Length: 433
Ligand code: HEM
Image (cartoon, rainbow, N blue to C red; front, side, top):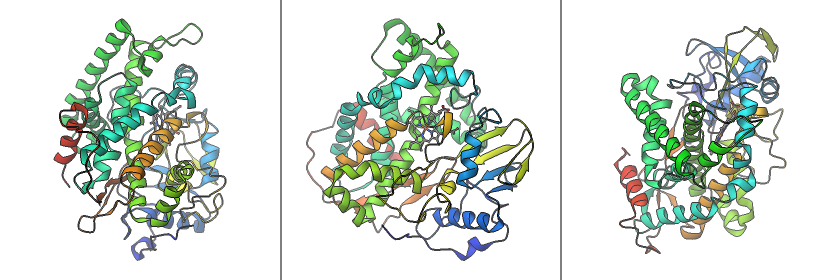
């Protein structure tokens, strides 16, 4: 068991902690993460005797801090609708496919795509993932100092998402710009984000038309041809599916992997155990999903109801706080410690119930391949003391900058001229530090 690295901060003792709760701008503690904030919220909720609280920000919402209450809500999709799956709402002109649907549409859509995302369905991507991770490592390995979140954790999910749609790896930076326009554009720059979102829809329309005509071995082509009870996805649904793949697949995974690599850069005990026994890597990924859950989840209440001793009204919004429910003392022993051997690890980092993450097997595969290859090729990377790591807050959050140092080595392959690698390295290096 590793000792918690965050200590209670006096600023977190505020009487208004619960009503003032802000998931988009959390207090960042001395360890560089919002964990102390999450733990203070959990403790304040436990002390108050209620794990569901009304919060004032963003025109008001119910924050669900407790694991039991989370479980109860996700068991009742007929009362707690997924038609508002993000909070505040993302800047999308159209409803979000699957994640933003209730039954019967949700059941039909999941049935069409489920097998492509099952453990066998995703296995086919392992060789190309390994290839791309190694190409990126070849691109940075001679440097000796890089931001590993920007140059490894950020590109890989975007490259994989491009490959899932049968598109070239160098399209990844474009995906990142579109994701940002959707998830932050409505807050930061509503007018500026519109052309980017239109560009994205036009690109997806064109891709779908080409796949329909020429076919392909990618997930998009499989889903275009999939049929349940004689019904297929319409063009509009396919376009929504592409948007969802991009939103669901990139932001969450880059945050999870960025945070795990940050942890591996300083937690020598954890790194040594994984170096000695690679079979422990999947457990480290699951514990990271619990301990540093990147995603929050939202619901729209369809009827007046009570949960956790509080009464809520139809039309109100709920924010399911995955990282906080995952630290509920009623559900986890020693919730504030990162425990590799936690048996069993029933975290809600990937959600629960009928809307549980469609990409669960894909995430596990991506994170495992990245950690395996990095531990093989750069086993002793460590945090750069001159450049601090930085947490990127948001509805989806995690370590977005992790500058590390390592012994420079000669690359296995010369990747100069490789469009995928060069586009990525240029785009990551162009970002502000
Ligand atoms: C670390 C990575 C990831 C995390 C933490 C994560 C987290 C989550 C969570 C918490 C939910 C539940 C949402 C809800 O209850 O409303 C969810 C749903 C979903 N995720 Fe993920 N996700 C990750 C990666 C992915 C990937 C790689 C994909 C696809 C390529 C994906 C696609 C989806 C989809 C489609 C849903 C909606 C499922 C449904 O409504 O039936 N996710 N994810």
